[in-house]
View 1 (cartoon, rainbow, N blue to C red):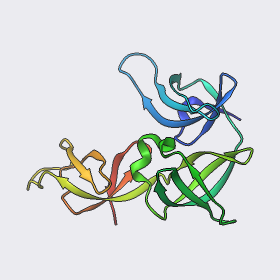
View 2: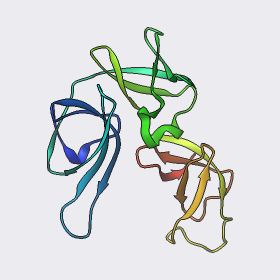
View 3: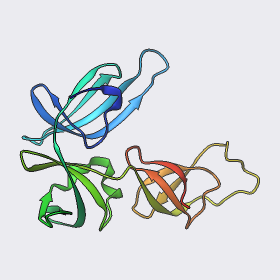
Length: 187
């Protein structure tokens, strides 16, 4: 199925140079000069090799037809990440690096979508947003507005990211798992 390259997301499987590739990183970049493009890191499904590719946003890519199944993450051990299919309760293991930079957002018991080609699991799609707790950041400064610059913070899963100045230690925030970016305070 043809898709615009500007809509590529982590977890997609595309056909590139005649082979299936699982997207592990996708970043939309709009330079000051020239057209926007997608910087994509992908992993070959069969060989396991990785490559970086740049697609113009108006290019088209072939999104492969895969079977998506709802699964639950159980645990991680030396053999990889273990998941269980929600319908059949069948368990299977995938390599820990399949998620790329999104790996820290995977939590025990989390429901995910796993894509299969010919019955073989090939990629994991996390929920778009997760709730994390800020464990370390600079203190809140009275009178500082939300329009000012962001400050560094460390989340409970070890991820470092930028948050608005009004977010303090111990607060729960909503994080976009694709870009590892702050969305809003958790309600």
